[in-house]
Amino acid sequence: MMEGQFRYHTRSGWIEVICGSMFSGKTEELIRRLRRAQIAKQKVEIFKPRIDTRFSSTHIVSHSDLAIPSTIVESAQEIILLAQDAEVVGIDEVQFLGMEVLAVVEELANSGKRVICAGLDQDFRGVPFEPVPQLLAIAEYITKAQAICMVCGAPALRSQRLSSSESRIQLGAKDSYEPRCRHCFIPPKDLTK
Ligand code: ZN
Image (cartoon, rainbow, N blue to C red; front, side, top):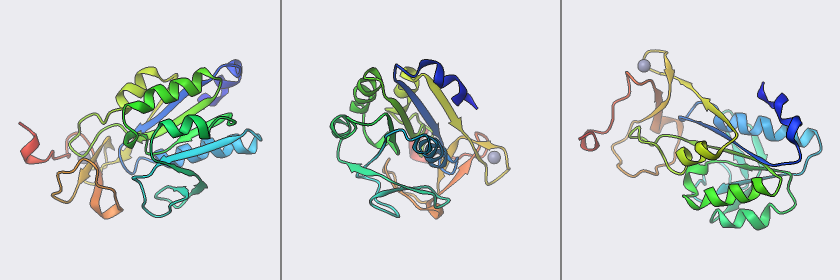
C-alpha cells in the first residue's frame, strides 16, 4: 500500500490518520502498522485516552481481539514526555483527546517521529467529531476506513446508536451501535433541526 512512499523521507516525521465509523477496522489497521514497525525494530510507543476502559486497561484491543500493549494517558500533553524516545507513536481513540492533541502530534512529527492516529471522524449524530477533522487537515496521509451497512450492505461511514442516550461519548460494545450507510442512517430526532 502507501507505506512504500514513507522510506523516501525517513529523516522527517509525519502524521497518518486512520478514521472512519465504528466497525470499520480502524484499530486493526493501526495495530497492523505498529506491528510492522516493531518487526523492523523501530521503537514504538502506543497511547490511548483514559476514557476508553473497555476490554483492557493496558492494551489497545480491536473488536477482532487483536491486542498490543499501550499506555493510558489522561491528556494529550502527557504523550510528549512519554514518547520522547519513540520513533513511531500510535494513538488510538484520538477523538477523545480534545483539540490539544493537534499541537501534540505536530510537535511529535516536527521532531522526526512517525505519528499514527486512529479515531472516529463522525459522532453518533453523523456530525464531524473534533479534533479528527482538524487532524485530517494537518496529516500527510489519510485512510478513511469503511464498514459495511448492516441494513443494506453498502459502504458505511456512520455509527448508528441503538440506544436513546444523547451523550456524545457512550463507549461501547457491539450491541450499542451498528454501522450504517448515508441512506440507512437515522439521526437522533431531537438533533436534526
Ligand atoms: Zn444502508
